[in-house]
Image (tube, rainbow, N blue to C red; front, side, top):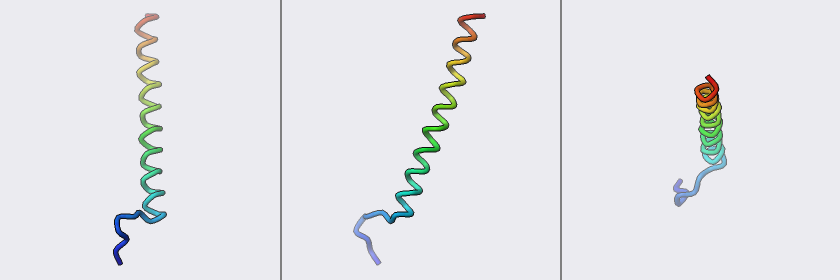
Length: 43
């Protein structure tokens, strides 16, 4: 059955979960970079 380009609820959930995982990873990387920068400035 064709859905005319519309996503199912499961596909939408999978896409949003992926976005959340990317955001979480980016936040973790930012914390690491910030700690490195602060360490370089203070040390």
